[in-house]
View 1 (cartoon, rainbow, N blue to C red):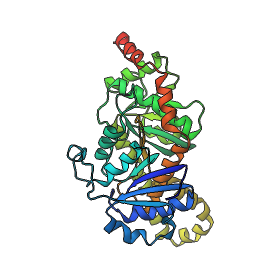
View 2 (cartoon, rainbow, N blue to C red):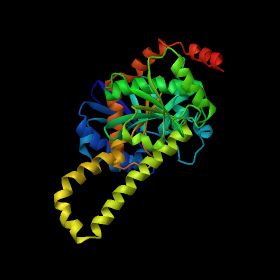
View 3 (cartoon, one colour):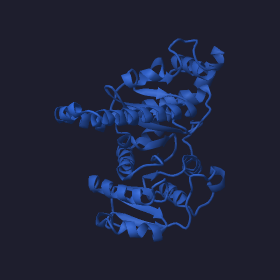
View 4 (cartoon, rainbow, N blue to C red):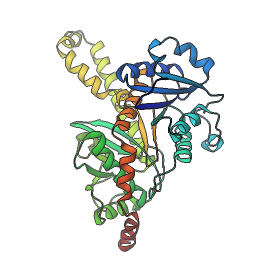
Length: 349
């Protein structure tokens, strides 16, 4: 494999549609990013026949055999120290400096556990979080945590707000992102104690954050905030609800057009607008959530990703590598006294 400025390691066996969707996705990504090289980990007996169907991959991919894989039903505790799985080997390539990022569509819990064990958490950060970029009415926003931590305390939420703020600056180019906590109401007395405590900590701390308070789920799409912070349980439910709603609207539009002759005729005039709407609402192009707070870039693709969706996860990984996101967030975090956040909490409560 030739020298390149960027190398991404890939777990070819992760996800519902692996390895075909992964390999086809890499072929798409290779066309868009000719400067990227890939180290692909998987069962060569299963991967090679698909790999050979895409000549473009021969010059940009190195295939390494892995004897085992992480299954969707596997518990993280049972696979976390198994060094023979394609997932472990792909993450370990980042630790060894062979790759700048890893992409996997595999078991989320296992990917988080192995990434945390192998890459380690950035000093001062208590828990890494899953973060993704999604569309709202006027642009895009960052949301975290999306499932890594089902329960969070106020410190965790405050740290998520800080890391999300940095990601919005780097990935979205927003000079001063508006940060909000996801809650069941906008009033200060609403919500769980940890949410209210986190709000007070952020407002009373020295964190350089434009904190706008609480945001309710139905307001997310209105573009009121650039960073939305939640615990992993709430964030994951919100994410899947948003994705489900987008798919439902698409299906309803198709059904309405099929059921009316006038609608089919009008489609000729509406087609450009509908194509733009479909592209904007297509959840596949926003695939690729990263684990923020680690000493390495680990990107989680949706388990049910198709080839195009997986290629988008690779796009996100490449963009963050080019922006030196991990070194940047590490440097920014080093400047923050998170003990001061704890002191604020004690003073307030």
